[in-house]
Length: 271
Ligand SMILES: Nc1ncnc2c1ncn2[C@@H]1O[C@H](COP(=O)(O)OP(=O)(O)OP(=O)(O)O)[C@@H](O)[C@H]1O
Ligand SMILES: [Mg+2]
Image (cartoon, rainbow, N blue to C red):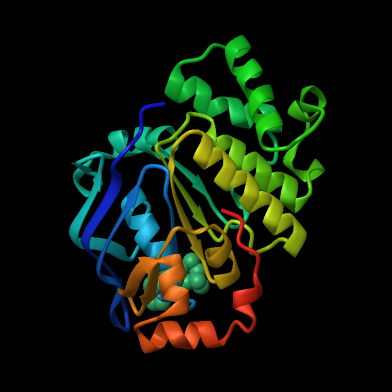
């Protein structure tokens, strides 16, 4: 697949929440970019604006929030100016999304296979047979064995880790240019976390997709990310190659984050 260069370029993004207590500047002038084949981590304490940054790009900012400034150029086109129909096409087809809690994103009364087939039919116009075959390939790619049988299973018959694999299969089904994973493994045990992240990064690498991982977990950043953006109070306070940020943080807040993770230097790197 021919994929190179900058996929997403966020410029001076500002997203505010208009609450009864006043205006909350959740995202306050964020600029960052992600290139094809690259894994970018967005880290920072709870409430720093990581998820709202992703939501803004995806056109999913909840009320009473509003994007009030900036640009989110996806292959040069500003998504913040795109019509809602266009954004529905972008989400799922060009940008895959994996969130923390798959149970809330999966429909409990539709079989796993049918749910993964849905974007293939909607975005790629596949017929039932073609979609079925592709779903079996996807189940295999994300490490779900016995795909023919599991196709007909329902979400409650899957463990948390398996449901997250289903979400990855859905997110990658249309071979998106960008995958955004927001705390994709927070609810899972350590071994399952590693397997899921290995799967996400492998699939992204195989399709030369850009990957943006949002996480609190600096161990994940050290192991998987090429570059890191550190976020605090709606702003990026530090950005750079993951190695450099870990070895020579320039912002005191990054140092504070690192101080909370003892023995980080001993975490095995596997990218
Ligand atoms: N629905 C909302 N109403 C009002 N303010 C909100 C709302 N959602 C988010 N915010 C504000 O936006 C800020 C950033 O939230 P966001 O969810 O992006 O944080 P985060 O960095 O993803 O945190 P976490 O690591 O806990 O997921 C919050 O501190 C909060 O003040
Ligand atoms: Mg969040």
